[in-house]
Image (cartoon, rainbow, N blue to C red; front, side, top):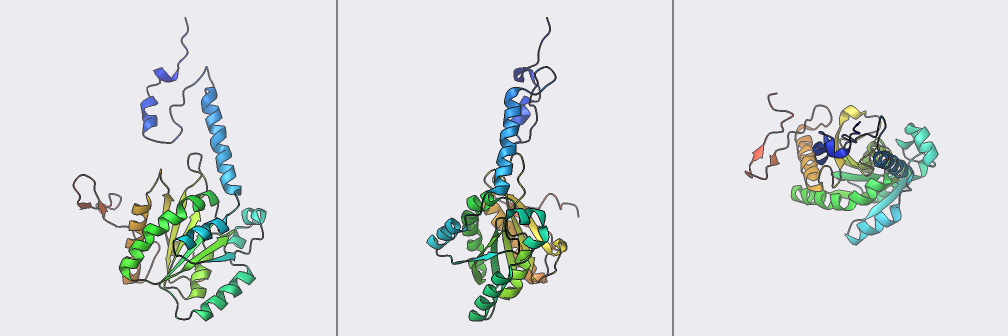
Length: 269
């Protein structure tokens, strides 16, 4: 009698406990099982929803205010979500009214700041809604320890990474940190990305930025992300650069020995 393989006979099944990737899905005849197909469709719908979810900047501003952080609402040159998705260049620059508003703010608060903090919806406002406030709390611990001055949190609707360079330049900031929703994956609709630039100015390319990605509860923890960011910021101030010439060599505390070890990706270099 013919035997139809099921999940209980799948030798790869135990690997599913180690990764959210779609492996060991099983089969029914030559097709995926119904539950695996429905899970895929659900994840795809979550990813699409994350891209189109409106940025609830009012709620985020209220959360920041409760924790003693001021914020300023700005808008990119992309008028709406359709323009943002079709014209990436518009998301990389401020709308003229927002740029003027920021100039007036900078004139009223001369002297610049050490760190400008920018938060943009990017391709997942869901990530920003969930992770901005708890991450900033951890980041601020490191900022306070270094004695750096901070800007209000700049909230940007329809923003892309490069818009932070314009904001940092207008504020006269030594460094800028951008928090932005990353492109959703089928297992990660709420992944937050961090982009750090030393001496920001309009026209910089990605080669001048450092990126820390997948900041979320199921990915890189807030504490670890803040630890790595703080290392990059300290080294950037010391070496006066960021980007491809600044590597993440932050030492990480191990849980067993409690002693730091080298970044294994850089071992042997």
